[in-house]
Length: 303
Image (cartoon, rainbow, N blue to C red):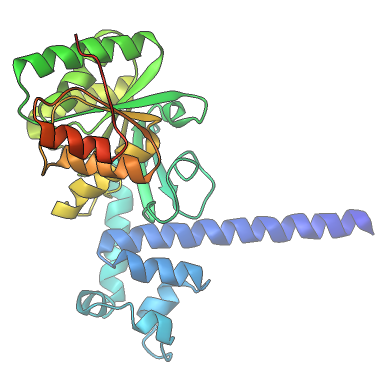
């Protein structure tokens, strides 16, 4: 009797896991089609069937769902066949979905990213390409960040600091932007170290485009990470979100050069909110230094 009960429980669990995978898959394709994340997240939290909830116009819509629909969502929901065609084409043509080094992370699963990024910050999906072991909790990660237009001194300091942390077996995290980000990624790879590039775009539209070759190399030797799916667009907010992920997956953040209103300062703020250690090079301006001190920063001796 116990044997059969255990078997039935196992079969029920397997059916539940299969159903959950199907729901995750539907949510992914619906998000790529253009439905908003808040709507999809609410559908999952209410344990509703995503396709039934969105495309079955004959049923009376649940109030919590109806309030989440935007005008764009209502327009998309009118044509289920168009969605089916979109899904089929994406499934059959998107290289990311066929790449063995690629991975999709779901907010409500237990995975490498949900162990690092708090639920209130983690988007519904994130995507990686490369060596996912770099996200392991037992690996040390340092974010090295700064301006897109660094001084010669800042470039040399970036090289020196990156070398030091690579030699101490840290994974170097940055955002693949021009300037300090690019230098830290390149020096890490030249030393045979590991690096994670957190992107504000999907893997099909690397920004800046001049860093396409660098991104390709990082996907082979390190890890690319993004919250932007293969059919999603990049917005101004995507760059700010990128800064959150850089701060949260890192153990500490090192600031090379910044000004008061910049993406780097936004990363510093996110690191402070995430209770991460912040180290910074003397900025040469008391106002900027004081601002970083306000966020708990500690000044490095850059001599």
